[in-house]
Image 1 (tube, one colour):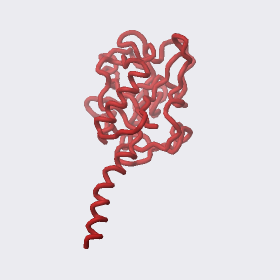
Image 2 (cartoon, one colour):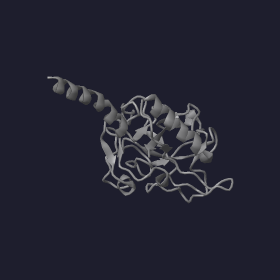
Image 3 (cartoon, helix red, strand yellow):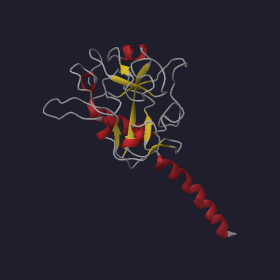
Image 4 (cartoon, one colour):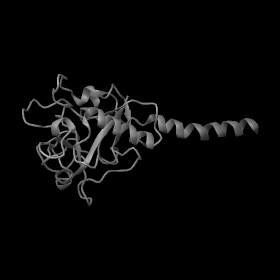
Length: 210
């Protein structure tokens, strides 16, 4: 009887830990509140970590899925090169992709059902009020930085005014050049909170744990 009780206790104690350690992908439940002004890549990474820590998921290095242009002596950055090798799991333990190649293929399991916040909650999509399916990435569909000479990263994630950023549709539907793309559906109208909200977003972005 004691052995059975001990085993049962181990199961109870281990279950939350296993679920906790499995999460390595989420959409931020809150943006910066200041449009696409995220404090650059470092600020966005710190935001991912803050949200993950608050959700009780510790011990991982978190990276925002964002590309950035070469600037200040620093080379250009591709979002796909920042996030490790996978596999990645959402807050409910569902594997959304096995590898970088899988993530950027039609085989990934991304979409409204599986692209959850760090709290395990869905994000409003097309048909919801308000629609918040625009997710900041600054990236093309293959996860690389656009060679376009215009601003596609809101000043490398430091602008809340001029410029624009490529966004994806987490629910895989809507308008734009690539409406079903989770990471590169269309450019934003601008970089301010008002403009991001006005076109179906809220300044959210994807976070991946290494």
